[in-house]
Image (cartoon, rainbow, N blue to C red; front, side, top):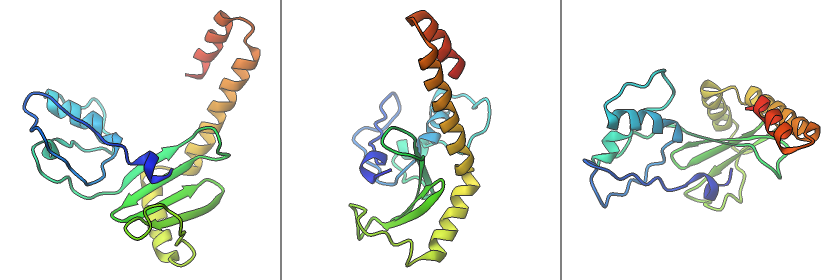
Length: 169
C-alpha cells in the first residue's frame, strides 16, 4: 500500500483525553481494540498483537514498533502487506518480488531499495512473517473473493443473492 493510503490520521476525543495533541509515531489499527477497552476500563476478551495507545492519549509518544498494513482490493492481482519500521517501509506481495523504501529520503516511494539491501529485506520479511503468514492470508482472501463472486453469479433475485452473500461472511 502506498504511504498516502496507509498513513491515515487517527482522531481520538473524549472525557479524560487531552485536547490539541499530535503524535507523529505511526500506530496500527490492531491497537484500537486494546485502546478502547483500556479507556472503558475493560479487559479485551482475547489477546491480539495490538497494545493500548492510552499513554499517547495522555501526551506520551507511543513506543516505536513495527506497523502492519495490508491491502486486498481491485486493481491488484495479489494482496500487498506493508511493514513500517521507523523510516523503512517493506512491502511484500504473495508470489512477487518485495519492495523496500526509505521514506525519509523517498516519501513518494519511487526508489525500490530491495535489490541493494537484501539483509534488511530478509530481516523485515522475517518480522512480517512473525506477525502473520502473508502468503496464507493472501490465499484466504482470494478464496473469499472467489466464493463471494460465485455467490453473486448464482444469485437470481435480491433475497437469494443476500442469502448467498451470507455464506461468505
